[in-house]
Length: 220
Image (spheres, one colour):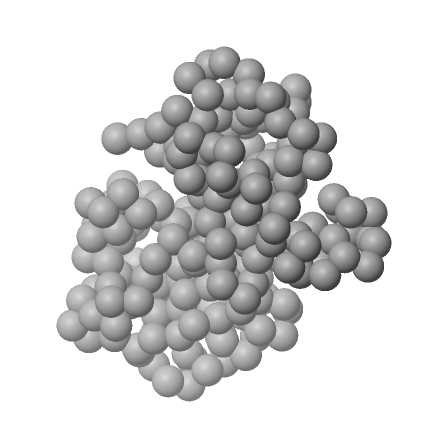
């Protein structure tokens, strides 16, 4: 996963960053809220936010993202333990609220729970205003009408749908779509580019140098 970390205590920031990288995640860390607002975008799979940080607190950041319709799973890590703060956090849409101090392994467990829940979520997902996909039927719909795609294009859509909100890297495409053949990255990009050109709405995101992802679409 690509994770954004906001923690103003440098030692804890470094400890969390190293732990997350050690278990296979990519991490971009920040120490004040204003930096986060200026850098956060839909390429992140998860936000880990302290609340009491300089310039813009964690609550304000999540509220700002909600206003911008940027929906990213969020874990708050904080010393605040009043029920009013916990209630506000969940009202804003956070997935987990971890009270300091905590074990790094606890954070890892919470992240895995979020991953498993997202992967097991409803079999019918919405990609955009008009596109949706049935994982069970392996069918892409536009305004409720099934769309005609090649087998390989459907396989690409399917693996992205199974990993909704997460980046699928080139090696995963190579193994799952091309059966482990020695296919180079430009060939994979060309196939996905042909797929994207045939779509009426662009919901497949190219994460430069990493792979591709589809974000779950939420109507507001």
